[in-house]
Image (cartoon, rainbow, N blue to C red):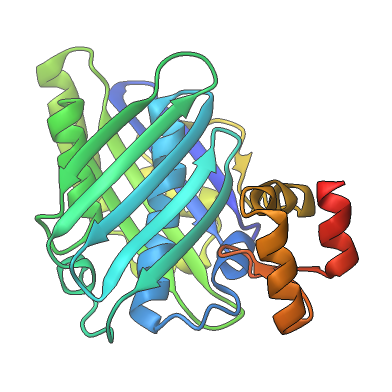
Length: 281
């Protein structure tokens, strides 16, 4: 199955739009070597899928960040991405993880969606985490902010090296209100029959054909999803300049080198005494 793709689709006679996301390689790269507990891997997988779906749904050019923060074992989890579906993500824990629902993992907290368009003003939406699942929290976001009936279905497999994260999305189109609700109710009932294994193991065309074969979904060209950290030696140097030369040289004198590790991809950048002097010269 070709993985790491976002599929958008419409229905010729129904006022509803849909999306299907299946991610494997980018998801594995994102969680590799972080030693997250299984429930945290699953949470990040769902958050990754949700961010891809939101990026396609909100129709903007620029960057997006979807962050969960609270007082639970998972202090925060965040996915950063852009309209090109370049994604990266991380989770931070402050106590031993127990449970698997959003409330059990994040506790009392919020979902913060921040959109920074290439042109125009920055937008931020904040939604309390009042539900047990991430899908319900995002459905509430659309109901509150967009007043659009929305449903999401998630499926994750956290098998090391073979992890997968998938999601299905339906949303009414703001056309004829009563017709769009009737159309949505019809497609929602069909979508509720989707099995976790089908989302994870079948290709997108097979999934859509099984669910909506009588409704003729019109599927657009898929968009590739990639893991892209964005860190670099030059960006690390720019951060070191703010620390100051003497403090860095003192660190080198004590430890031999200055080692900076990227939080997202865990790549390590090493600077010796001469490197530090070159930066400031």
